[in-house]
Image (cartoon, rainbow, N blue to C red):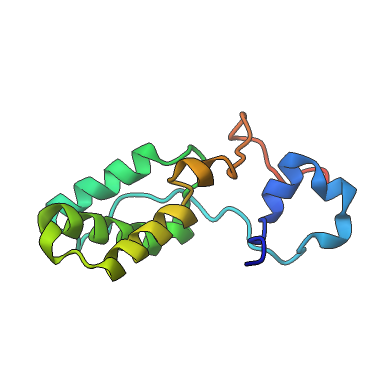
Length: 126
């Protein structure tokens, strides 16, 4: 399995952008806003799980473009908690995939790098 692609802002933060500038994607979308509140169509229990996920995620990782992934994860987690008997292996696999993609497992958190100063533009100096 190939190594997952690393976003440009992580390359800048880790210093590999200067070392290998040809590997940068100049057209990669940047930060597009805070993740915000849960969608209005979620029931109260699933919205509570949304808030739980946003609270436990590494600061600075989740943004507006992650809303659908967080919504799907919240729905899957709600299903697993409400009705564990109906939670299939396919559900579990999807749940783990969302956890991984959002950096919510110990191994995946080790791959997340967020600057200490959240107000700093990670693309400055490119």
